[in-house]
Length: 84
Ligand SMILES: [Zn+2]
Image (tube, rainbow, N blue to C red):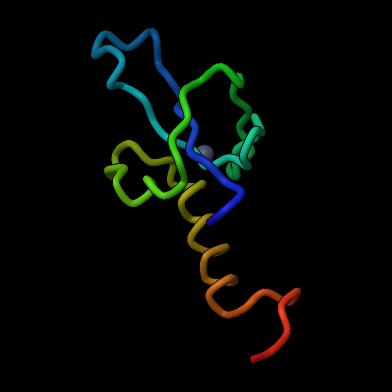
């Protein structure tokens, strides 16, 4: 999953505090998540390699579904790469 990163959707109105965030998958340096939502570039990011460390309640289901579909395509081989 190179070229992507995790971006926090913070909920300042939530009294639970800074832990009350959900995580989306965005292209590196992009504000647009795979689910179509757009976030300010000032929000917190984490490396995409942390994706599996995010607990399911904190994940954007749509983003993870898209990401898993992308991972499957890459696991099967990119069309840009020659056959072995
Ligand atoms: Zn999302």
